[in-house]
Image (cartoon, rainbow, N blue to C red; front, side):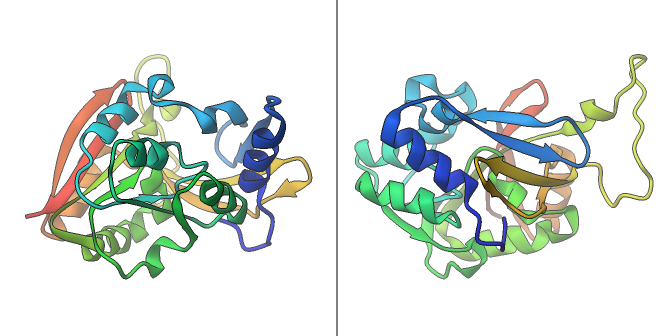
Length: 235
């Protein structure tokens, strides 16, 4: 996400855990207005999670790897339910916190994982780590290598086409861009700011075409407005 050594996500997790005082991360985009993520949202319980996240957790099986785990709320829930679960994130502060909660967590890049799992979990648009549409094949191939026989990849994403719709329903997009779901973000908290990093929002049809090229099967497990929950398995 960022190579400059700054860790706004880890800092806000550790700060909120120490004093329980609400604060927020600012997410800056090159294509839309700033978004704000309250620290408390990173600590939500199962009951506080969106329905889509609950459904994803209910579909987990076997040994689970939570990828981009943040404060580890999904991994903690699964561990409490008796799952063998591991978590990775590139945020040192996030991993420090997860370890303090008794999770098996590691600072590791997704593309460096060599172990295999029954379930790969990538929530909060975790598939976005692909960065852009061109890199989605590489990301899905890496995931397929990490899946045991009958393994699965669970993730949510958003078709952000609505950002480009006019009031009359017509759809406009910059023809100079590879794909309308390619974004650039920066995260800010306190004196911590990441560099710009690429993030992908994928629509279901494009996801399906990409996965099919790799002989992977895609199912839509849940849909709500422009968001969807997908499961990918080997054909």
